[in-house]
Amino acid sequence: MESFTTPSGEFELSRFPEDPRERLRAWDAADEYLLRHLAGIDGAPPVDLTGRPVVLGDRWGALVTALAEHRPVQVSDSYLGREATRANLARAGVEPGTVELLTTQDPPPERIDVLLVRVPKSLALLEDQLHRLAPAVHAGTVVVGTGMVTEIHTSTLRLFERILGPTRTSLAVRKARLIFCTPDPELTRAANPWPLRYELPDGIGPVSGRTVTNHAGVFCADRLDIGTRFLLGHLPPTRGPLRIVDLGCGNGVVGTAAALANPEAELFFVDESHQAVASAEATFRDALGAGAKAEFTVGDALTGAEPGSVDVVLNNPPFHSHQATTDATAWRMFTTARRALRPGGELWVVGNRHLGYHVKLRKLFGTCELVAGDRKFVLLKAVRK
Image (cartoon, rainbow, N blue to C red; front, side, top):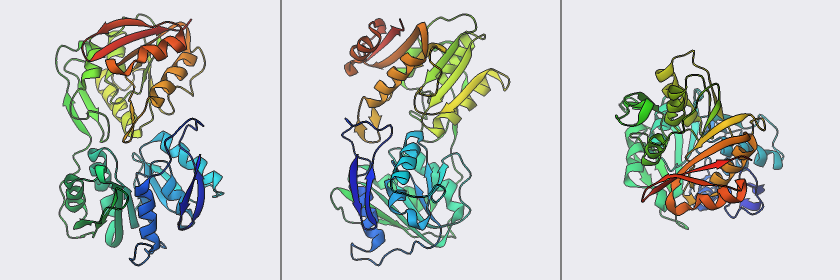
């Protein structure tokens, strides 16, 4: 946990889950730049925040914590980010309810007087959310985006212009930039293209030819990613009423394949992204119908599962947290999966060969079997003793 100094005060902030060994901070120079601009420290007049401020994409709650006195609305796709926000607000002494916490799947606010956008890694997610928020933006709305230089591209600015109105950028300060957009109420915008639906290719097992639904921001939203394809080609054979988890489910293709291969199984889809879980449910229901037995949970890996309650966990873990490369998410998935598995239960993990997941799995489970591999990927199986 580190101290975040802002024009409105100093705040102790952390990511979620809290880890004293974590070296990544809960804010960066882009957050600092935006807050200085709002306070008028960069030479421009202070921004009037007395209306209805909405903060989109606030990663760990740094922005809404610093702006809590203005009663902002936070719109976030991340369960982990939302939990970090709750903890950081509580640590700052902010009363519950002062900041309204919405997910990207919730109905958007009806009016927005100030729209602050922390540019996400996914351009698709930005497009979808700007479309969803645009009806609440009016001619007097102040729109300011922020991001690191590496996160703001010409395509980013074009999205703002196409959906909201004329857009320009600031000079770079400490490798961060601001985006200034002037809403145009007369602007004619195209329909929101999200969610995206397409048919899966043949030759990938039970889900061949099935329809997949991808909400914006889900990994590889317009095609089947090669890691998932590799796992589908080596799906573990299961029989009977097993409890199977698609952990980090994304669009739910892996769990849907497991359900189609074993109709007696009970499927659990878990992801920290609200967009992903909505995608997984749509994909699963299209393939198996509304009455098929499954649960869909937005959460922190398998921390909410009963110990010893799961038979099989299928996992294709991410190795990025926003722009940072980290194995913390994978380790969290592995440790919570081990706790949730019954003795003899199996964790199946697909990953890039160079990530060395076998070392972590052997340390955690005491065993790790190479099921399949090629030049890029390995499929590993760890059994709970």
